[in-house]
Length: 424
Image 1 (tube, helix red, strand yellow):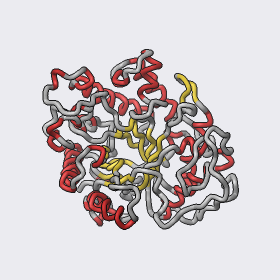
Image 2: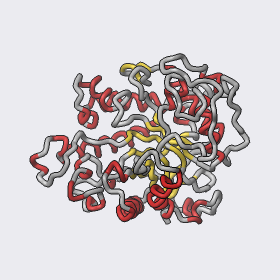
Image 3: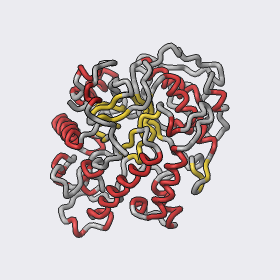
Image 4: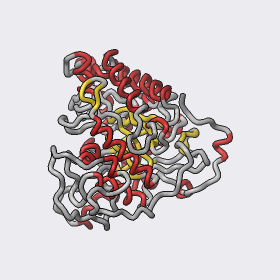
């Protein structure tokens, strides 16, 4: 039986709805110097926040591996992926960005969120391990790094390890220029044609140099090399890779620009395979995934499952869920669900979207993670009760795909006897 569709919720929301931290002092001002990250690893810098460190998750044995469609640790304990997406943690930990309202400042925001995640049984946190602020990049020029940004990531990983929370480590983001495709293309070609990120050999080499630097980074707090750190559940090669194709509606594909042609999708597919292989070659310990939204390509027999399939817009983004997750070294399949952004927010579409990816991942023989999902409320000023009523029909569906018996903390796993870990 397949390990079910499991969830990562968008936003800095590991804290439970009933828990909020009130900071005794103002939030940090953007651009000011942050705390000493190494010192913060063992204690709160300000002393204002003292988490309950007794609320840690049960220990996982070694690295999480894929066994067919299941994820498990070295003791055959099934690993359920659930928890929050996070945003701006590199900047927040360094003190160059303010945390969301209600969270303590600087590294205390990270500590608080990890503690709340553990207390609520959330096993996984997805982090954006790059600069969101162009004034605070991780990589300032090819091969030259901002040590303060690295130390922020070191702290995040050390704190996750403290609470036994696993990390999905997102290396770059298609929607963020800093440390993203735009940066690599500018370095490689002097242009801003981000489609070249997926095909230009120099851009590819620069990106792979960064993969190597990431895998071999020695954590300044724990002393553990990233590629040897079981705190990391998986590498996410790129959040939502896309070609720069945004047609409103079309069936005349031949009349569209090169970004909308199938050849651009082929470039993303080849890029995915190449970098999955590269990362697993230098680090066979960790899962590797790519943060696709999960669209099917124009020539896919499954494209009728895309949002608004008659428009073809999703099919022309350059994604193809099956093709781009078919590589041996893309060891876990991932997809997203944004009904409001995609303009298809019915529960019927959601059921189809979840089910079609479940079936496709089963056919590929891979675990499946719903890496992002969310639902906008109709108006921001509504009461909590109205907001909950608007969201519940959408939020309930993913959990209906999680069989109760697979949420057990410890189970027999005879599947491990006849299946080797996937990948390189």
